[in-house]
Structure formats: structure tokens, C-alpha cells
Length: 368
Ligand SMILES: [Zn+2]
Image (tube, rainbow, N blue to C red; front, side):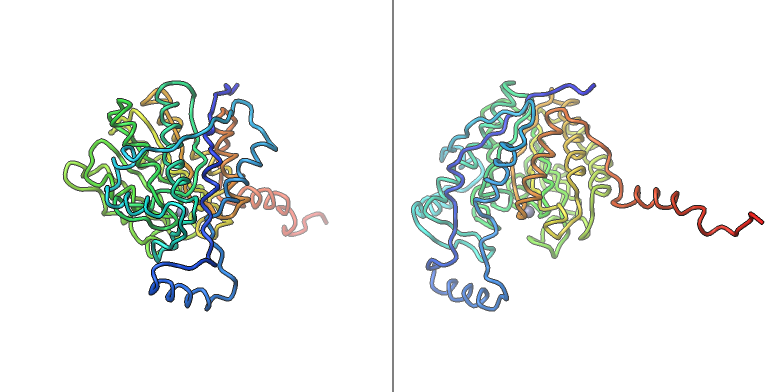
């Protein structure tokens, strides 16, 4: 019998106030012109894909289909000192100067609306709240349902929908303030977590394991040979995947590379940059809900083996609201002790059954 475990979802509705509007004036003037030209050439009207509806879809599904063992707690805002563990002071000053403004920051489609700076502070702070609850033993595991996402933000730049690097802020907090000596970050978002990699590139105390669709897919980083440098050489592990890779490939990467890496590293906290854009609805890769659940099982086993089950997940991408909400739901069910089935290559089971069904049809007729 599978035992029910308690899981805490950390959610703060202030993250909904980040709502970049493509119709307001862009800044600065030259960039504005360039982006307007790109957008006017598109066949369909471009909307900002990283929108508040992503989060409401997750929370509404959880309300509609509650999971025994899963409770919800509020988040909090990160302080400037907490953010400055991974971001430069000048970058933070720049971002804070945009409070209550609308602006484009980056050609990689990162923009702010009047509520964005606070939303970003709350996203990073809610990731911290999730980690504190896990490290202090107040919950079996935690999931921070936050946005804007974080893993593309590097020490000095907002990129790819990300303002502050939430998972990095949480890992740095665990290390600096909660007594965690070695933090493992598993990034299974479809895109490479370039920002997280940069932040911990030379840090031997944070292992960064990233499975992602290989370059030239955005952001184009994360090659196999990127392994960190200096004292951090070996604590960056990249597994680039071809487009269309699915459950079997993801689970193989985790069992054959992540599990031995974790056995070597011996983390005292496991964090997951949990993106859901590897689901086939987002058209880049081919992971299923069962796949996300099985991947959750692997990271849970790593956490159980090395650090008394301390596991916190932080939401990253996922832009189809159906696969995003059902993906998170599948992960929460697995964290709460639900039965995890081993996914097979899609369709193989059905073809085996069909083979059995048709088996006798094409045999020579021996009845006469
Ligand atoms: Zn992504």
C-alpha cells in the first residue's frame, strides 16, 4: 500500500499582477520599432504567452480536483538581500526602477507591467518559503506555483520571460541561511536553464542537472561539454535532447546520469525547476503526464535516499494551460504518494494488443 505524504503548495496571488501588455509603448525607442516590425509580420496577433492564466489554470484544477494530502499556504516577497545572493546590485536597481512601469527589457520577450516587479519579488520569495518549509520539516515536500519563471535570468540580465532566478535564489538561501551544504537542482523544463547554470557555474556546493531540447532551440546553451569550471567543474551536468524526445528518454537520462551523479554529490536538499513545456501540447518534446509523475518518483527517491526526503519544486515554463495544469496535478499526486506507473513508448502497448487481436487473420487456412 502506498502511504499518503503531505505536500504543501505555496501560492501567492500577487504573482498574477505580472501582465505585460504588448499594446503599450515599448521602451526604448529603437527596440520598440524593431519589435513592432517583427510583430506586424506575424500571421496571428502575438500575445504574451507567459500570462496570469497559466497560474489560475493550475489553482482552479487543484480546487476542482483536490488531492488528499495537498494543502495550500501563502508565499512571501523576497528581500533585496536575498535576491542579491544571485543577482548583481546594479541589475536589481535597474529592475526596481521599473516598479509601476510598463517596459520591454530584452529582445527575448521579457517585459514588465506595473505589477511585475512585486510579482517577481513574490515569485522568488515564495520559492524561499517552499524551501524553508521543507528544510524545517514542516511538510514532506513543497511546490511553489509561481511566475514569472526564473531559470533564464542570469546574475545581471532578465531573459526569456524571467526576471529573477527563483530556483537559484531559493538554493542560495538554503545554503546561506538554512545550513544546507550541498543543493541539487534538477531542471526538466524543455528549455535549458542558462541563468541557473551561469549562477552556479563555478560553485561546487550546487549541482545543476539539466535535461532540455538541444540548441538551436531557445536559449541555445547547455551543450554536453558544459560541465562547470574551477571548483565547480563537474557540478554542472547537461543532457541535450532531440526534439520529440519523450518519457523513455527522460527517465533513462535520470536513472543513468542523474541518480549516479546524486549518489556522488550527496545533496542535503533537492530542488526541481519544474517546467511543463516538455509536454507534447507545447510542441517541442513528447513527455506525458505519466512521464512527469515517473520523473517525480525518481527525484523523490533521490531526496529520500540522501536528505530525508527534502524536496521542493519551483514552477518554470509550460504555456499550454491544459497540459500545464494537468502536468502539475500529476506531479502533486505523485508527491502525495499516488501510484506511479512506468510509462512506455507511446502506442507500443496498444500495438502489442492489436498484434494479438490480428494474429490469426493472415494465417493460411488449414481447416479443410
Ligand atoms: Zn521552458
